[in-house]
Length: 222
Image (tube, rainbow, N blue to C red; front, side, top):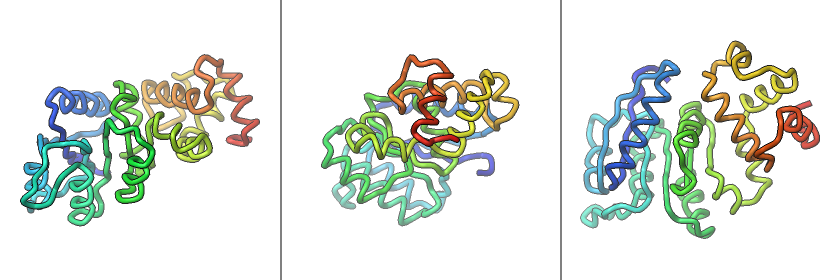
């Protein structure tokens, strides 16, 4: 994406919007520039999406928000559908408190968002990792969703080409600083990715060597 990256955040909790903006500011250290527009309910979100200024690259929607019944916009899902109609190029990130499998399957089936996160899963590093995936056009589901969908889906969703390259460099015993010289990632993003690789493999405390052995056994790397 070319700079600046236009981002729409729609959430009815101001402190959460600020947390998302702080994550964007942290991610901007990689050389990105963000222009953020924010809204606090379905009505204001609707008005922004249907405006002529809708040139967003990324939209972050809370699923549960005050409704806009006059336009039959009753959730962040409805806003996401509207965005997909009005701006097909926009990457969609949905954030929800719902952990019911039927509800999550409905979100995935109806919206097929670029990223889907359970709010209780999110910490600062997690959000940066999700942004990194989403802005690169990759799928990202947070940990609880993946566990509900099944471990097989978790592996499929999580390991992209960059993850595999990190694993290959781990096999060569490169540390994070040395990896950063060979990858288009900052050390902090590499560390976040390494942490998530461990979580995916269910080996949160394993050494790099143990992670490499597991990755080879699962045919993730040669």
